[in-house]
Amino acid sequence: MNNPRQFAEAVGNTPLIRLRLASELTGCEIYGKAEFMNPGGSVKDRAAKYLIQDALERRLIEPGGTVVEGTAGNTGIGLTLVGNSQGLKTIIVMPETQSEEKQSALRGMGADLRTVPAVPYKNPDNYVHQARRLAESLDNPHGVYYANQWDNTANRDGHYQSTAPEIWAQLDGKLDGFICAVGTGGTLAGVSAWLKEQDRPVVTAAADPDGAGIYHWIKHGEIKSSGSSITEGIGQNRVTGNLEGAPIDEAFNIPDTELLPVLWDLIGKEGLYLGASSGINVAGAIRLARQLGPGHTIVTILCDSASRYEKKLFNPSFLTEKGLPLPPWL
Ligand SMILES: Cc1ncc(COP(=O)(O)O)c(C=O)c1O
Image 1: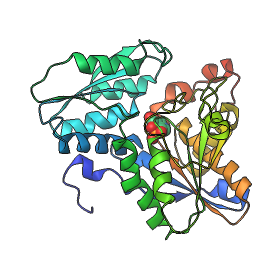
Image 2: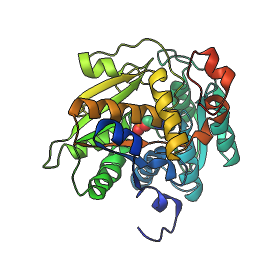
Image 3: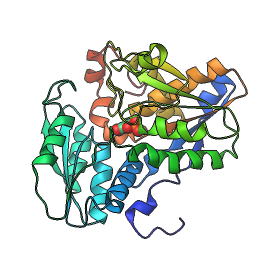
């Protein structure tokens, strides 16, 4: 769409950027889909757009209605902006450990933000359960919509319909591998499903941080995790509705000590000011490239901007305390 008339039409059609250092290092062509250039600043604008579009089409909600979601922040930002453009109110439940920058952005755009203590999913007070219960308790004649990005497959359908065909068209179908991290799994599942329907074999893979169970699930069939990560928005420990049945071939576990040097190079040498989940994605693309060998073309996702995490990512005492490498310029 060349001349978008409303917010949702400006989501997607992001550039594909060649990642010079990762490509030179591996002898492959490695590209990043610049999802940080979406109007709400992240890949989660796509999920937000399709979740709300689906709810409006199914008449679960109409202007004046309320959208409720549990989110690490980026989906909340997307939902609030799409919601604002459609006359919907948004209530966001978010763990208080998530970055201050995402919290202040949500308040600035008018979301009703409720921060809650960060507890595991199996605890009934986990933010996802709190969001669902809150939605169930509300009354609004125009509808209350619990978006449920985790299990609502309108999320992965959005990536199936938009992200994957965009990548394919941008490379004229010359693609050998796709890799990204998993939060809800919507991006990886939706893109993988579409790519597997094309007439060229494409290897699809997950890049999983420490503390997440998806690596072990893909390799050995059960969720198992250890350690922790400073990444936000990714790191899943259950098979979400969006991940169920997803055709994923391979997985790599990427610790923070591996992703941060890749991220510092992306920022300092390629001018790509990205958040840590993009670092894990590019580190994962390098691992996949080494596995496939030189001459292959691999795509990953550049999810959001470092500006969402400046108080953590560029905080020497925060990084040093965790034994993590600092950006060379700090
Ligand atoms: C920064 C960031 N990267 C990656 C993801 C993961 O995307 P998905 O939920 O499609 O798995 C998220 C999800 O919230 C995110 O916020």
